[in-house]
Structure formats: structure tokens, C-alpha cells
Length: 416
Image (cartoon, rainbow, N blue to C red; front, side, top):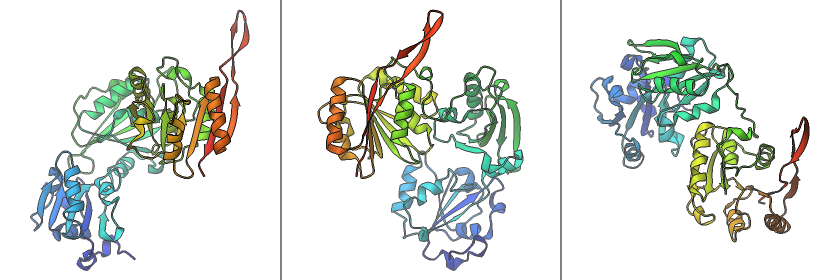
């Protein structure tokens, strides 16, 4: 059994070369005895300028994080691993959007201690009187602000870690522009320290252009009158997308996502992505889902990125190029959707070969040639063929009549 923080002694650090210590705005005095011991016994101490300034003179060689941090992280994990005693200072809870996650991902738990402080997220919830379990935490540190679009609906409570002092003003402008200007913002500067400050205002009334560099934002989402809600369920309205008409219609899209069956942390290849609807709605199903969209045409690739940002999944990656040549060297997918170029020579086989066992392929066909191709594959590899027929009621003079959409033949198969 590992010792608890309150019972960590010098002997407990033997064999554990790395200590990751959370520190708050209350500085050195706010650290537990175990956290102080970890810092005092280190040979190398890494941290930001602000964090290192809290520490009294110690024997460790102090190293300030460079920008970007990657070279220093690499140095810790290669040069120092199991050779030197290293302590790393991080804000609050190092395992909550912190450097602790990056440092420990590939390490054995017996190599390190993590000694957290109370997180800024927990402090903010306490100040606001919010239930932490009912509040969404989003980090905007080195991440695009457009990810927030996915979480906007009436009554949603958000806590956002800011990139810098300009983030609150940028967020207020974004909320105002997308129809959530009535949302209530609270900005906490230097939370938990003697210089703590709070500002409260509606997004569309926010006037502070520069907040303190260390700040956190809370949002109570309130939609303006007439603002349209966007569901997380697949099958979003077609008119939410910027498109040249090359998109999978919403009814077919919902059926396609049901067959692709996204699960948390899974990775999709959207081949012949067109408008990007399948990959976007795959990623909207869970924040850990990822996607690469393959698209040959520059104009369509640009639209995919516009749509991904607009619908809250700016992390969707677009590769411009011809499949399957563009597949080389990429992360293996858990599922593949083939929406374009179905009959291209070698495309299906390349997709099939890259899948591991249990991987899924879904292909939609609308032409006789593409139907012939997937019928051939179905004979060889099994799976299910489904014909999707959709008709929409539209005005026909003074009455309504049915307009049939192009029938879609869908093949889905799991690699065994």
C-alpha cells in the first residue's frame, strides 16, 4: 500500500525519482509537510517563474519551464529518469489538465508521487456554491476557444481555465456573437491568494479588455431570444453546415453514426469527407473522440474546418490528398466511414488492412457503380446491407407533397 500524503517520510521517496507537487496562490505556506519534503529533497526542481518564486532557498538546481515546455519534459523523462531526484511544481492539482498528466502517462506508478493542492476548479465551485459534479470544466490553455460551442445550452454551468489575461474578453465576444450574450460571466483573478479578485458581468456587457494573467472564468449559459439550440445527438439539421451540397443528409447521417457506434477515446477516418458532417458528429458524441477527415478538394477541406470550429470540435484534423495514398504513417482508426471515392481501386482494401480486429467500416453508396462495389465487398467480407429511403414533406402549391431523397445503400461490417 502506498503511504498517504500525511505519512510520507524521507524513506518513502527512495525508489521514486519524481515528485509532482501542486502549489496554490498561498505559496510555500500552503504546502503540506510531505510536499515541502519533496521539494527540499530534490536535486532538480522544475516550475514556472511564479511557482519557483514561492520556494525558499533549497539545494535543488532550479529550472524554469521553457516555452514550449516539451524539451524540458523530454529532459525529465530521459536524462533524469531513475538517475536524479526531480520535483516539479504545478498549479493546484497537477492531474487536472496539468503537467502531471503529461509526465506520468508512460511511467510506472512506483516511480513517482503526486502531491496535489486544491484545484482552481474546486476553489471556484466553492466560491460560487456550485456542485463540482454538475459543472463542466474546460481548459483553454493551448487549446482553441471554439471548443466551447459544443457545451452551450440554457442553464449549463462552465468553468474555464484561461490562456491569459485576454481570454475573458475573447470569450465574452464569442458568446455574444453566437447568441449567448445574456450568459453570466464571473472572472476570478489569482484565486486562492491574497490578491484574489472577482468580476461579474453579462457577456454582452463585458468591458474589461485585459484581466489578470492568472484567471479563471465561470459561465452560466443563457441563450438570447431566438438562439437555436444544437443537440449532441447525431443527425443535426443540414442547414447548420456550410456546404456546396456535398453532405450526408441528416436522416442518413444519424443512421450512419449509429452503425459507426462511436465510443469514448475512439478514432475515426472519414474518407471523402465532403462537408465533414460524419467526422464532426462523431467527435461531438464524446470529448475524447477524434477524427481525421480526408478530402481532395481545397475548397471542401476549408469548409470542413469552418464547420468543425462552428460546431465545437476544432480538434478535427483535415488531410488534403488522395486516399489511400494519404493514409501512410497515420494513427490507426477504430472505425472508417467511406463516403466518397468508394469505387476507387485499392481504397477499400487499404481501409480494411489498416483496421485492427473489432474495427468497423461503414460505406454509403448512391450510384449504381458504388452499389456494385459494396455488394462485391459484402460477399467477400460479410456485414449488413441496408437500403435507406427518405422522403420529406414539402409545399406543393397550397398543400404538402412528398419529395424523395436519393436512396442510399449502406454497408456496415466489423472486422473479425
